Image (spheres, each protein chain N blue to C red):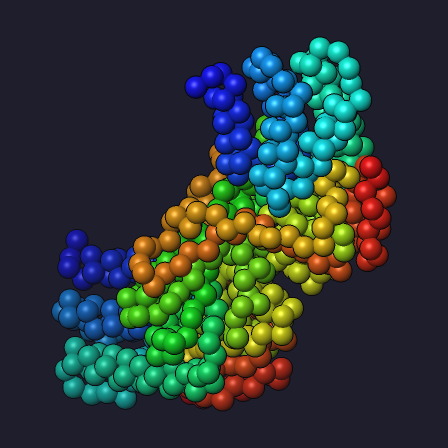
Length: 286
Length: 286
């Protein structure tokens, strides 16, 4: 096989099979991959790169940030003239730069709102939430769920602790017991749907219900490139073997990674643009 | 060391350190252990046995069934005359027989109330709940949480599946996503406190909140020997290493096994005696 074919297959597998990184990180990696790919293509560079962008955009429908940033990059490609690989390089650079600014504004907003909270609880690992928590802590204490089945909460805890934060790690089973210690809950989002409901790692709904029970504010922190044009999402069911349940014909392990959380459970959206709760979300700005 | 001293230490360790079996099973084992112990004692049999019973009763304050059944057995010992080891044997036998009848009546009550429910969700593994589910399934489908950190849900799933049941196994993170599929939730109890709140495996509170959100009845199934005279419980925090979180001075894994669930979240208590919801529970019948 040619270098191009190898590279293309490797990029598709890397975006399709990554269950550890959050939506922002994966979306930026998908954009950066276009530049890597373009460097391996010898003819029809822009056509081939666009085709790959379209294929990558369809791989993970739950994570709308991927198709959103790739769409941004495809728009950047449209207006360009010059050497094809240089066009791709500039479009990727501008898209990543724009997405990083969106993240920075989102993190700044989260830090503004949460400054003063002594204990913040989160679930799973959102890179945007992690950046906000790293700026807030210390002296903030973080309560992190381990986040079955992938245990991404362990990565979050280690990375925050290495920067000096105090992190309590709990099981999802302990959410209802421990949530009352938190001053606020802060989670990321894989997508924000048109009705304001939020798609995020499974377990977030239970955390939102527990937070409401104790009247603890529940904040969703997500860049505008996670706003979805859709009002529904179709849940991905993953390899049942990952749950390591006993094997028996009568036993069916169910391994969903995502779920949607109704808008009514969300106290405030923290983003690079204003997002209102409990009203139809505005169409995307592009 | 004498055989008696060895036996006594082994019995204490067996009741103190068992984190897999539920309250009913452990309580019956504690009673049965008195008979084993009495057989190793050569003088002052009744005094020594009573002393061991008192020591065992104090080992696991959260699991009031242990002190309750031991108390029952101590009462049986009071009225007896004859050969000491035979007295212990008869008292143990009567206590176990009484507790088995209480369990049987409780299971029968649960089966009466839940007959007709096509999908029943449970959490952790209660031997009483398991007995009821085994009688209800098939055709009932069971949704069982894996129950971190001990994964007792795996034992429950395997034992029910071996008897022909269909069991879905989920993580605790999936409770909020999956609970709406259930017609009823059925959990056991480690204790029912005087105000009607229920002490059970951590994760039960989150399940009760999710059940209420979808208006799914939440049943607590527990024998009368789990009624506690107390209105509070002190939670046991277990070995943090069991969570297998990353090791770092800034990371504190928190490993609670139990939590209490307010009476207001409980639709009905299923027991061998009538227990009213939302009123002060009657004093114990003995």
